[in-house]
Image (cartoon, rainbow, N blue to C red; front, side, top):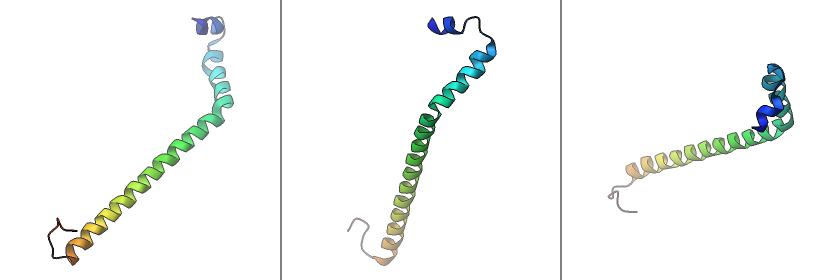
Length: 74
């Protein structure tokens, strides 16, 4: 295993503190961009679902009270 060979003989804090901090500094912008995109997409999906549910609710509420025809008719 190459990973164990690289960190062999080094103090624990290099393996568990310094290396992850360097990776976060180097790739932090990429991670933040990906996470922001994911949150943005999920927020838009929730907004779309709420708007569609609201339209369905309004159509069912007002079409049932204003029309005396059967529900199968358009």
